[in-house]
Length: 261
Image 1 (cartoon, one colour):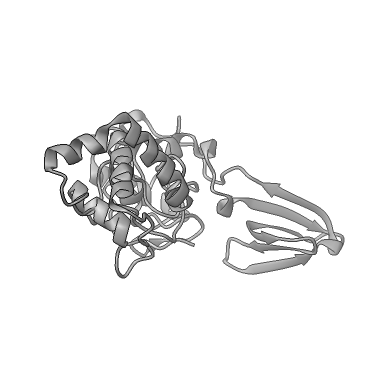
Image 2 (cartoon, rainbow, N blue to C red):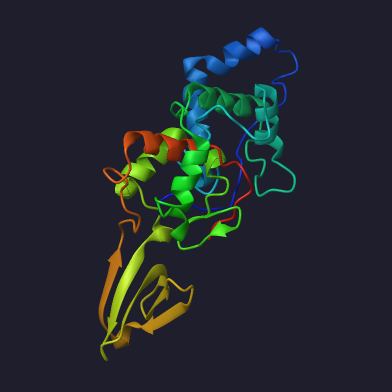
């Protein structure tokens, strides 16, 4: 697998009562009015999308479309996190007022779920991941596997079931640029392939399958080909529908603390 991505401003969830004079019923009306949902989306796109994606389905921070938040179980707690951030994490308090925070809460609550959780066999899914599916040849879970692809230790917390199913069946649907690869051929005939770590006017830097950093001067290259597709194969036709459900159920169950390159 190779699409399921990356780190930095972890959890963007919100909470604390809105304006002191607002009752619970009034706060519910404030939250869910169409105008405030629309304004919440605008605020989210300005303040939150950089980490959680423009569609709130996650990026460097987790997917917020599922209605499941690690640090909050109520709207008030969500609003407080938006205002104050989360101590000990890279989640800052970005929203400046209680009213604006409520609007973002309203927007997130309007998104609904992230797809039905599959009724698969978790143990069978784990066996596929570490066995017949060969997922662990590129991915790591809780220290088991390799780091050729993203660490999936907490992927069930960060990504929705729908996103994970698409990643398994159509890994090229969305490929994070940090997992793009490149192929180079030097003037002397040396060839190399690896993750594209960086490129500028003078040089290209790759990370090969052995985690070796490779640097090439562009003056010495005969060919340089960025590859923006995923290295992960599609499992459509490789696994049957039952085992796809088993694998997705296992991935959804992964809620630990994972680190990614």
